[in-house]
Length: 314
Image 1 (tube, one colour):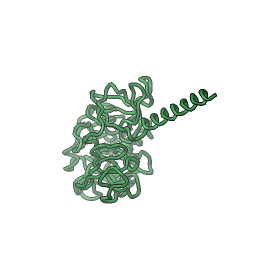
Image 2 (cartoon, helix red, strand yellow; image 1 turned 135 degrees about the vertical axis):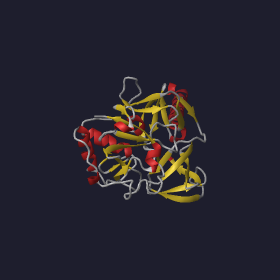
Image 3 (cartoon, rainbow, N blue to C red; image 1 turned 180 degrees about the horizontal axis):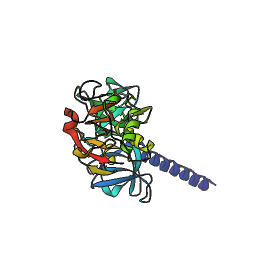
Image 4 (tube, one colour; image 1 turned 90 degrees about the vertical axis):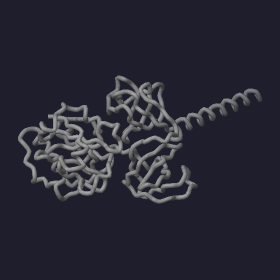
């Protein structure tokens, strides 16, 4: 009887140990960085090559590994979860590596001197503030904001879906040569004109990180929403939308074409911003936090300098 009880106790203890090990394995403390090591890599809805492709990543782009299922990794890329085949990723643990930008998602979040709730608070960051992500350490991000570096608990920060840039004064404003009212352009007829007219309905809708609805848009959320509502589903992120439709030159632009811009802070990614060409050298887009959907001049300094191409969807 004693022997049986001892066996049952050992079994219970073993089960507890396995449970603890599993809990640690699945926790945020195991987050690592993955870097794409092939030209283009599919992110899928499930851990299978038969599963739907939900996004495309390009060589050098980085993502967060959440957990693993055999050779597949569940990842967070641009605040979207999906599955990536681990054979095409280089993995790293706690490394000082550029992870792009992140957005504060808490109402008032502590930036601390060290990755601990016991560490001194450097400052507090408001919701929607954009920070540069330096690295991950356990369940904390090392970030830089206005030249100040500190740590933020992972629950209060999300990877930025669009590579938001600190646009020069005047290049993202609602006045001057870089913007226009809905009446300033007269697009040609056809389906492209219909898309432009539909897009203009949302002028003034606020920028919302990760937003893809009339309650708030980020840049690629806006373009994907407009096209989807007109019967043309396209990819979700700016870089992946570069694979939709067909390539057109700047001289060939027609109303309704997608126009793309590089991200100066992340030159390795194909595109960091996207909008819809409306005609007369202007395009409509959702710019950045603190602004709204507006029309800007394609040949203004910032956009002219960072223009990287266009795609025709219709």
